[in-house]
Amino acid sequence: MALKMYNTLTRNKELFVSQEPGKVKMYVCGPTVYDFIHIGNARPMIVFDVVRTYLEQLGNEVNYVVNFTDVDDKLIRKAEQTGSTVPEVADTFIGAYYEDLEGLGLTRATINPRVTENIDSILEFIRELEEKGFAYEKGGDVFYRTHKFKEYGKLSHQNVEELQFGIRVGVDERKEHPEDFVLWKAAKPGEISWSSPWGEGRPGWHIECSAMARRYLGDTIDIHGGGQDLQFPHHECEVAQTEALTGKTFANYWMHNGYINIDNEKMSKSLGNGILVKDLRKQYKWESIRYFMLSSQYRNPLNFNNETIDQAEKSTERIRNAVNNLKHRLTSVVVDMTAAVDESLQVRLSDILEMYHAKMQDDFNTPDAITAMFEWVNEANSLLQHSVVKAVDIYALLHVFDEMNQVLRLYAVNEAELIDEDIDKLIVEREQARKDKKWGRADEIRDLLASRGIILEDTAQGMRWRRK
Image (cartoon, rainbow, N blue to C red; front, side, top):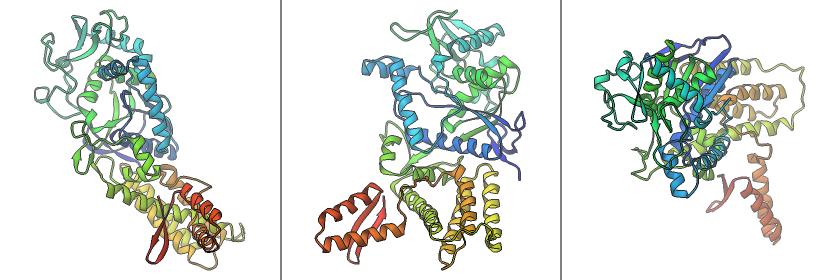
């Protein structure tokens, strides 16, 4: 099998070949750290974590760079509103970002460079563009000559004359062409700023990623990723800046994840329908949030509502129960490692693993890879129905599961988690304690179950339980 990925630049699925065998240079645009992240931010975090982890599973060393935009108009306004400084705002929300990142079961990037730590690289980048005739200064601002780069629009597949400008680009009569964009912004009184050949100021939005990608990964990178909304103008401008400067291809593969809608409506501040990750994590396990995010192919739009996330909870519970019940069964069987794995089981597990890799190598098709995981759940549950089970069969099942879960991460390893059989025993003990009027013990069991996310419900048929 060979990994293929959809390249936004060519609008085709292409065989992935890194520049250096066994090593991948990957840059993903990170958040502007002026507030807590919402689920729209979380989707690329999870999607590209899966891309990175699967590339590593295939034996690659991935240099994974995700930047922080820690100075721009939004941070300046937040600092003014809170009576703090721009660096203080950035530090606060970078800390919150890392909490959410770890709370979603993600690992940190190889490096998270900040704009403010790369001002020298940005200034040098702009200076070189100016020397090559691609940049010009007007009134302390420096603009990029869009028309001088003949391939402008190739990523978004539009002609310059047809492009819809205005996204973070204001109309400025000083521009030689309306399409030109700012590389360096002259500072307003009282704003955070740095000295430059053009006066006090700060970087424009687009230049930061070009400069940091070049500094940390080189002139040409293997994969550049981000949300669909960044394709134009941000990534288009990155291509223009970098390729004008280096004369080389900026990124060989461009990946963009789709939008998240809320109850079939676009998530926006005007509608007030944004959902913060920190709030969502209080209601749902991170495995369920990941399941929801990976239940649709990454390039497709994704709709969030209570029904979809509740279904994700139930699905991850099925996976969790199968794994935990297997592990529990393992404690009661005789381990004979000289025994051979059941031949038919081995064949079925090989088929499941082959299906998983085939789907992941088809442009990271996580929905179908999850289907392979549920095929595994069926095999696990079927084995557990047998009165006699061999330890080697359980180990074979768990080995295959671990390989899939290494990337999908729909099961959190938690030794303290209760399995169904233990929960049933505790509920029986609690009911007996109540009959015996041992209220203290009954309360202890109730609190223990609650601490493990087990909710008790009285029904006409008796006590029932469910996982939170």
